[in-house]
Amino acid sequence: MLKPKVPTMPQPAGLITRPTGVEPTAVVQHIQPSPAPLAVPTAAARPTVQLTPGAVVALVGGGTAVVLVVGAVLVSMLLAVAVTGASVAICALVIRSLITSADQRR
Image 1 (tube, rainbow, N blue to C red):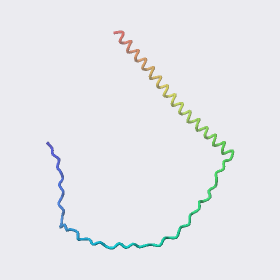
Image 2 (image 1 turned 135 degrees about the vertical axis):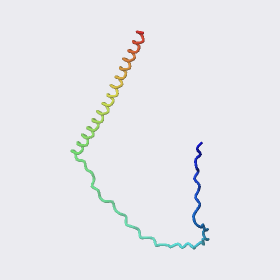
Image 3 (image 1 turned 135 degrees about the horizontal axis):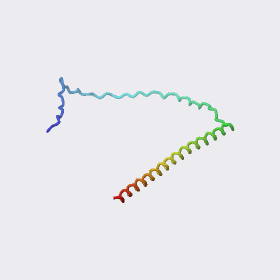
Image 4 (image 1 turned 120 degrees about the horizontal axis):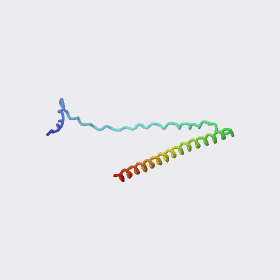
């Protein structure tokens, strides 16, 4: 049968020399003076949010609208699933009655 060919490692080209001995060197540490402490930046003064009565009414109205829209979408999806399930059940009953009536006529 077919045997896979195992690739062979190519031979290195040129002369191979061993590395010469490495002599250890002394490690010299340079001590740097510590830097002066940096000034801590102060937080920028941000304006506070102030809600006016009109803004509160707008927020409540917007939130109510979002809740009503999401609720209507969810209810319509649930209704679609219920109608689909009922129609599939009715189709199954009709098909079963057709099959049983066809078997009784034989």
